[in-house]
Length: 183
Image (tube, rainbow, N blue to C red; front, top):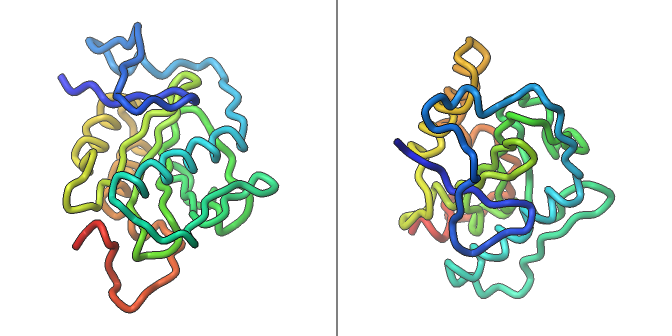
């Protein structure tokens, strides 16, 4: 059975797995307990991932900056694929348990796409899915969601959005119309 990479708010460079994850019945993994996700901490975690990938893919442009200002991402976007109206283009993103978020740098040339799933107070990352040498691939994201979302119509719609993640982006276009890591 596929076990995803799971990183807590304090990111690790090596993958780790949540202890106690009920692999035999993944639908029990999402409970009804409410988790509060601090917007600034989550967005800063996204920044950390983006900077790690900038180094990993050897993007040397010193002008690339990712940050958070008044609970809004700077230099990158965030789209909630579970509720597509909840995105950084429309304002402040609300982070909710059991939702999947697409985030990437706004500049298309540096726009390695990532996903983050919120699970029991933790952040599950899938990184650089669009790159020629991805850290994770889109099928891993889909498999994870199939095993961790409830089996209902809404979940199936969310899973359908994942392969179309580029439709849920706020990118600044460049002359190449491709991300550097896809070359």
